[in-house]
Length: 204
Image 1 (cartoon, rainbow, N blue to C red):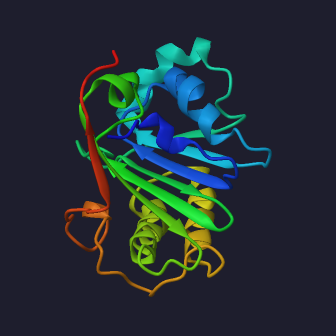
Image 2 (image 1 turned 90 degrees about the vertical axis):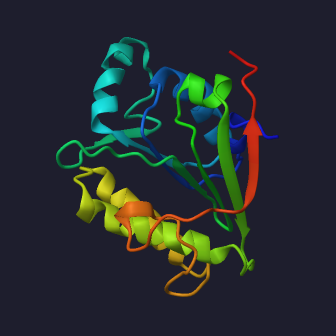
């Protein structure tokens, strides 16, 4: 069993792209952003969420202190009634990467009180086993600005995708048979079998 929020602990983060359907920005600032930015270096944190759910966060704006300063928030609109629905969280350091994929949104309920399934994959430079999954996420990030308008976040998303594919960070084949991109990519979603944990509803 793992604590969802604790998976964002890192002391040498360089970039993070966090893709979620819904988010409580006040909870994110106080409980998750602090974990991401606890190191001494400068890190870029980009939060992407569904554009309708983004509108729901407007009531929190009076209590937000760090949006646009310590992290960027970008709504992702899709055509028609389609929703931006991933819960995929990528953290990137100089010689490591961490990928979290699961059912939990970045809300207080998703992080603390719901029962959620979270899969975690860690990569260290030279680890050839985990690399294909990260390359697949890099493909997703590269394709996202063409699939949906993501505004000023497009450059940072492409930058992170390039960082993933750079040999100093993640080395691997130019394509992967480990599908994690879902319907935005070319392959159908499949079971992601890293380390899994179901956290029971205990902390309201």
